Image 1 (tube, rainbow, N blue to C red):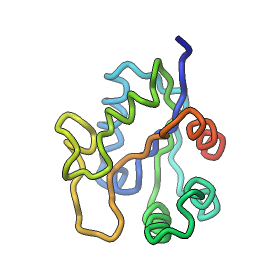
Image 2: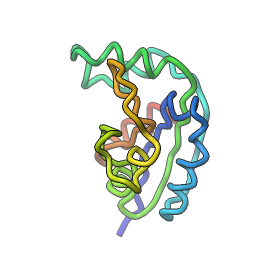
Image 3: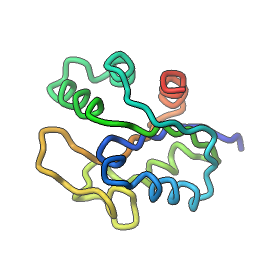
Image 4: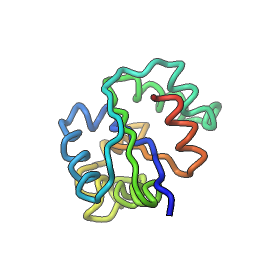
Length: 137
């Protein structure tokens, strides 16, 4: 089976809370390889390209503002079925209902804000991974 690559973002809430190391530890413990990593403050242009499918939706502007609010760690990881595997490791989008043992289930919480701060992003398909990796790396 071919090795896949995917994009993982540690969002501003994860960076601010000092959880990047724990998130990386879980990725490596799962057996995935870190291919590239960088800390950056994403531009509005980068975020507009990344979230283009959500443009015009009510949550778009609050999401972009949140992602601009602080540093983000962009990570390229590789492994067998890594896209599916990382999304399972991350847990469901809502940290309140994410299963224990997942990044969001163990480390995330609902802050009662207008945009969900759920620590991480992971590409949802091979096509999204290719597009997002090209944007971020």
